[in-house]
Image 1 (spheres, helix red, strand yellow):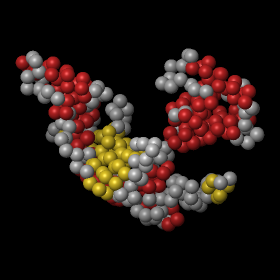
Image 2 (cartoon, helix red, strand yellow; image 1 turned 90 degrees about the horizontal axis):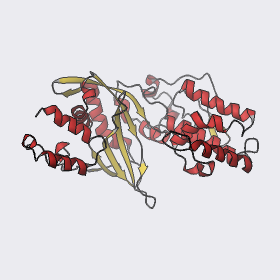
Image 3 (tube, one colour; image 1 turned 30 degrees about the vertical axis):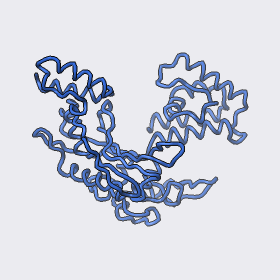
Image 4 (cartoon, helix red, strand yellow; image 1 turned 90 degrees about the vertical axis):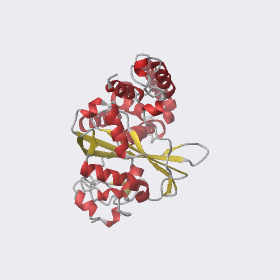
Length: 350
């Protein structure tokens, strides 16, 4: 039986099919003599390791799965990856709570293949503890060592060498401050792109200077502005990345969960200049409910009464699609124009 059939089965098994169903299929195939030597269990087919080595670091437990291991597994499973010579990676670090009643949380290190959106991101390391890792150096040490190796030497797979590049690190603002060892985003000198100090206004630090010196890779590595740094980032050893441009702003948190969310909450509980009366809020909710009957998006529009439970995709959907229609006759012309400016910014500058 051609070996590529097993590769096709591995790729299919990695696309969201339950392990139980794949094992049942393998048992059925093994009844036929041409498949009698095939594995009987999904874990054997996918080469799932029997042991999970865990070490205690940074105030918690950490398991390093392996960057080279996962890239090679994906090269085995996805034929489209084998057709290219260069692999561009996006890396992500973030924390997520495991329980509402305890502080237990996971901090996975995730990697995805840029330009291959249908291939799901994969974890190369997982940290567990009751708080975030207390040392970025310890937490990212294994990942950085492997990343440094593959960036310099590439990945060798079935006699072919694939060059590996980093297209970007996707981090929300708190994760960026932790990984890059910079001051909090609410502090003076916290701007990632320029050296502006900032000004305290309305309980926030605002960066209102338009002609400041831009922060560069060399400027960051030399820590020329000491007020911006709390220590040395583990990624400063990666000379092939730009310590400024390789870390783009996180669109989901900034545009959706911050700007758009705050704008809608201002309509509900903001100053009288922009706050909507209950009758207009009810009208806005009715409009969203009427749109929901004809929508083909992943999430149906919910009323503003459920605003606290809206997800980032719902704020994005309101900004780009439903908001321009729903707000047209609800808010004043000035407020509506302000909303459209935000929409144009996302469309033309996003």
